[in-house]
Structure formats: C-alpha cells, structure tokens
Length: 110
Ligand SMILES: NC(=O)c1ccc[n+]([C@@H]2O[C@H](COP(=O)([O-])OP(=O)(O)OC[C@H]3O[C@@H](n4cnc5c(N)ncnc54)[C@H](O)[C@@H]3O)[C@@H](O)[C@H]2O)c1
Image (cartoon, rainbow, N blue to C red; front, side, top):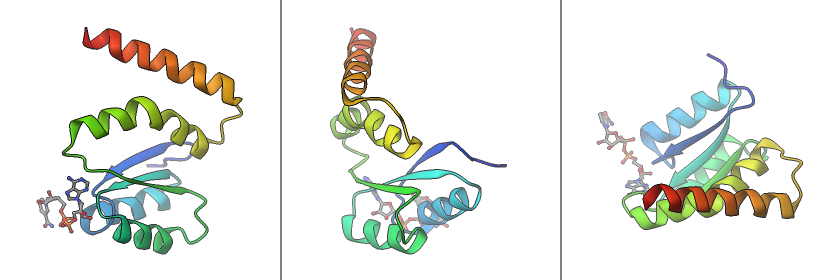
C-alpha cells in the first residue's frame, strides 16, 4: 500500500515498534509526524530515518496527558500537517481555519 501525499502520525515513535512503523511508512511514500515523550531519542530517530528532515517532523508529547494531546490536535496539528503537506495557505487563512476547527471542537464538547 502506498502513502504518497499522506501524513501519518505515529505515537511512541522514538524507538521499537513505533520507529519501525515510521520507517515502513516512509518507505511507502508517507510523510510522518513522529510523536514521543523522549525528546533525545526522538530527535536521534528522526535524524536516522530522514537525515535531511524533508518528510519527518517531531513532536514531544506525553500521549497519556489528555490535555496536551487535545491542545496539540486543536491548536498545532493543522499547522504542522500543512507544513508537511506543503500547504499554500497564507498565515491569515491558516489562522481562520484553526479558529474554525477550535469552534467546531468546542461545539462538539458542549
Ligand atoms: N515489543 C513487543 O514485542 C510488543 C508486543 C506487543 C505489544 N507491545 C506493545 O507495543 C507498545 C510499543 O512497544 P515497543 O516494544 O516498541 O516499546 P518501546 O519501549 O521500545 O518504545 C516505546 C516508545 O514509546 C514512548 N512512550 C512511552 N510512553 C509514552 C507516552 N506516554 N507518550 C509518548 N511517548 C511514549 C517511549 O518513549 C518509547 O520511545 C508497548 O505498549 C508494548 O507494550 C509490544
């Protein structure tokens, strides 16, 4: 299966099964957002898998911390993913999209 033009988020990505999954997704054409709580290992793994940093971005996060993950998903992920996807949106358009996403998320919670 090919993952060209797809962005894959992998948690626990700095080592073990997560890192192996990142390697496979890259081989299959994906761009990969590597999430892990261990910043040092994460950075080493990213350098090893994609020395030029063209198809990987790293995010240091404790996925057991619901608030951090929510914040990341609501506020940061669109910008991160757009960067990987090579979005042509302007900063203003991106902010508007993010605000709309936050409103939808907040609406969904109430
Ligand atoms: N290795 C196996 O044979 C095997 C088999 C079945 C299930 N599993 C399960 O799969 C998972 C991964 O296994 P592994 O061997 O690759 O583990 P590992 O310990 O080698 O790697 C786990 C990675 O997850 C990161 N991590 C741990 N808690 C985190 C958190 N709260 N937030 C963000 N990152 C976090 C660690 O920093 C580490 O980089 C584990 O839950 C394990 O129990 C492993």
